[in-house]
Length: 189
Image 1 (cartoon, one colour):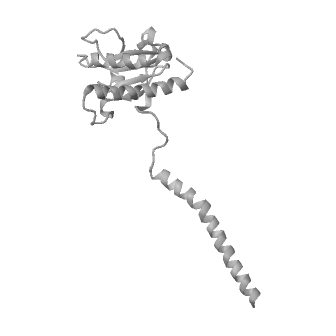
Image 2 (image 1 turned 90 degrees about the horizontal axis):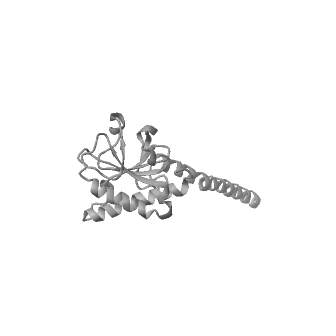
Image 3 (image 1 turned 120 degrees about the vertical axis):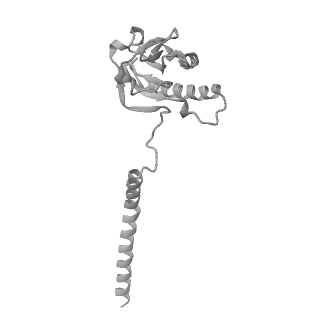
């Protein structure tokens, strides 16, 4: 009688152990799948700018010769070029901060029409279909293949940044961080 009681107890323990084993190994997989479907976390995004999906492809004829096969940090200027001085300063600072990788990059202004104000920066003229996808007053990174891939705006900086100078510093650091990553991972340009 004792043996049958022990045998039944062992069988009960074995079935509990089996179910416990199933729960321990399968439950986390089900939980992870559910968390992924529910978008509970960010999927390993490290870029600080907004990734343009799909990238805006520029025609090689639109890019001046000195910008071809280079990483380009650009600013989309309006016709009045009201923010060009500030943008030009920021672009120069970001490019200078690249150090030895500076030779792989250039800076430019993007516009849809001729700018009233003359600047020393190279200019990229876009047609009307490409302009609708871009926003005036935003910064962009263009890869050596001529694709606009990342967008930065002043709205990305926290509102706690009191002055324009502090906002520019935050924006410049974001552009610089992404550009350094791109230059490190890229063998082109």
